[in-house]
Every structure is written in C-alpha cells, then in structure tokens.
Length: 408
Image 1 (cartoon, rainbow, N blue to C red):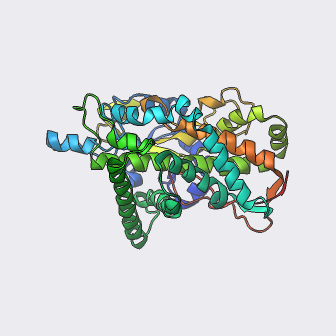
Image 2: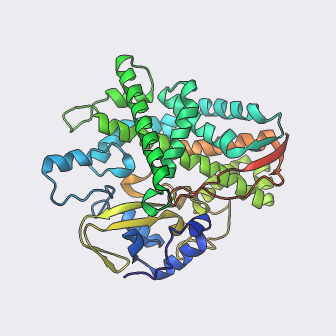
C-alpha cells in the first residue's frame, strides 16, 4: 500500500512536532513511503511484531546480501554495532558488553553516578541559572561513559563534539544535511573512529580494570575464541557511546520540560522520590528519545495484514507505538502513576532490547533525585528558550533548555 505523499514523517516541520502526524500514520496502517523507499510501521502490535521477529527482520538495514560472496557477506555482517547486527554475531557482541551494563553491573557503579551528578550541579548551583542540555545532561552521560571506558578528562570536550556530529549525520539520507556539511561530518566520524581505535590499541598494550580493556581482550565463544577485529571494535565503541549518551541526555531534558509543564506533578515528586522511577518510564514513553529505527525484510511477509517484500526497508516508529490508543489508555496524557508505563518500547523489544537500559534508568533516577533535592523553584529562564528540537528524525531532544532556580 503506497501512502498519500503528505504522510511523510521526515519533513522538517513534522520532525519538530511529530505527534499529530503519527496519529494519521497509525490510521493509515502499514504503508510504503516512496520518498524514503521504506515501509512505515507505527501501530503498537505491528511494531512489536517487527521488533520481536529477528528471523524476519534484519538489523542490517543497509545491507543487500544478494550477489555477495559468502566471505564478503560474513565480513559485512561483522559490524560490532548492536543496533546494526543480527544473531549469531549480535549475540556474542552482547555477551561481551552485557556483564558491565546488566542491572548487577550498574548497581556497583551507582556511587560513581551520584558523584558525577553532584559534581555537575556544584558547577552551576551558585549561578542560579543553567542551560540544562550543555551544562548537565550532556556532560552527565559523557562523563559516565568516560568512567566506564577510562577515557581521559581532557578528551571529554572533543568526544562530546564527535557524539553531536554523529547524531547530526543520521539525517543525511533524508535530506536534512547539506552536502557541504555532510563532508564535515564524515571527516568528524573518521576522526572519532580513529580516536576510539587508538584508545583500544593503548588498552592492548596497557590493560586496566575497565570495560574497554574487556572489550579489546575478551575472546568470543563460537567464533574460534578470536577477539573483536578493527571494524567490530569501531562499531561496538561508537554504539555504546551513542547509546549511552543521546537517549539519556534527551530523556533528562524532556523529563524536566514535562515537569515544568505539569508543576503539580513536580511538587508530587519532590514530596515523594519513590515516584521518580515510574516518572522516568512515563517520560520515555511520551517523549521517546529514539523516535524510530530501521530493519530490512529477510523474506516475503505480512505486517498488519499488508504484504511486504523481501529486501524492503522498514521504518519502525517507536514513538508512534508509545502513543497508540489501541494499547494505551489516554495515551496523550502525561501520567506518572501509569501502571503499565514500563511496557513502553522506548528501549526497543526482543533480542535487540537496549543493552544500556539499566544504566539509562539509573542515570535518570539519580539525576532527578539530585536536581529536585538541590534546586528549588525551578522555572524557565525568561526570553531564552525557543523550545526547538534538533533537526533529526531518529533522536528527539531539545537543542537547549534554559532554567532559573534557587538553592534548596
């Protein structure tokens, strides 16, 4: 089924405020969008079907295996990137990083997160004003990743710029980035990957008790006990850094905006911090940091009763499913008491469920616990906010969020 041309979620104005479009897309059902050369999936049940059937839908969305020699195909499958790999490679990549990012693994890291968060608040608390994205949310996620990987403090500003450039480059295939700018972003990406590989090589020479050393030196079972090769290391490290920063930082910014738009709920959470974990889940549902990701169809199949051919690309809209009225009661309402809030697909589903979800949840919980404990009378800075989001169809987040406050 080909959609009317106006059902295009990649228009810049739609990206800024996508939810009315998502409603129309759900009404349309599964459809082919010619301008994106992709089938659009937005309804809860259909999104669940695609995410949980890794046998039918490949995460190697950019790979067309037809005509490739077996050795060439195998090499192409070895991406190292968790969101861009399939079993069995994906299974082994996940095993390498899993122990560090499991619930048990991140629990031992909790004191470090408290220290990072309080240290960031210390930097701006005497100013009475903060630009939350650049002064808190972004450095929070980068600093936590830096501690996990053992990256030097002096490299943090550059790593942050590389992360921002990588996110911006995601808009290239949908005409959201100029050709000149894309050249700059490609050069930035190459420098970023070189930095990560140099860091990995340093760990081979001088191993430490950190996650990076483990990723570089640990053997992969069922792959002859070999370690990750260069392409896999690049994919793994970029994935972990991106997944560990953008989702969490945008959840913190959007969560604060949601509380300021609902001051009665902020007062309720201030009085009872036990509400924070479910508030975080509801914020992830209603303002999903990851709006959509893609899959490639492995074999002719049907999605929601619509035939989709093998080889086709599928755009899976997490954010649309998270507001589907067929699944959620009053889905447009921001309800911190929503009992089923944790069932959102903000972290995906199935074998590709976000490996960093326990860390992201912990960072969000502690961030709001400390912000609401140490800052009083939080409000928007007059005349400084345009409340615009970054021009990206995958990641949704404010470009900046200026706040004023008093010390609690």
